[in-house]
Each structure stands twice: as C-alpha cells, then as structure tokens.
Image 1 (cartoon, rainbow, N blue to C red):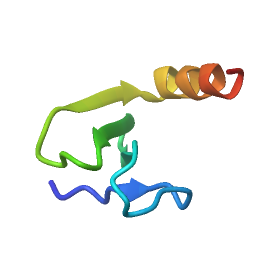
Image 2: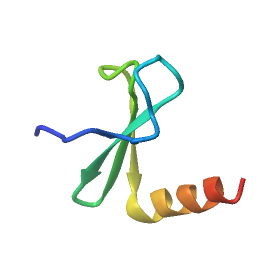
Image 3: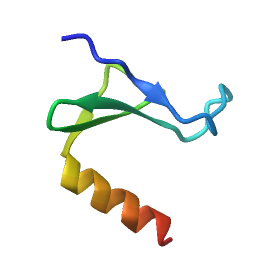
Image 4: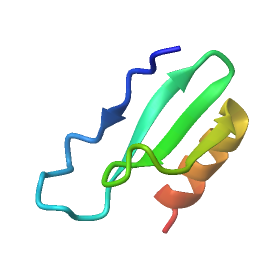
Length: 58
C-alpha cells in the first residue's frame, strides 16, 4: 500500500524538527521526515485528535 506522506507548509528543507503525516483508513500515520524509512507511529483518529488538542494547548 503506497501512502501519501504530507509535510507541514511551515516546514523547510534546512533539517529542522519535522514530522510527516499520512491519512489511513482508520487513523493517521506519523513519521520523522529526516528518517522516512525509520519507525512510524500509527494513531487511531481519536488519539490523533487528542494529540493535536494537547499540542495546541502548549
């Protein structure tokens, strides 16, 4: 299955901290843009929404 990984428009190509996201049938895939073949997180949609809510509050 080929995933369409997307990077934030706020990211640049200077090697800073960045993640990429991929929409999945029942959730979201998350990976380090600097290590695309490395480990990936697979989050259910509710967990991803909770993560975003927590991040926005910081």
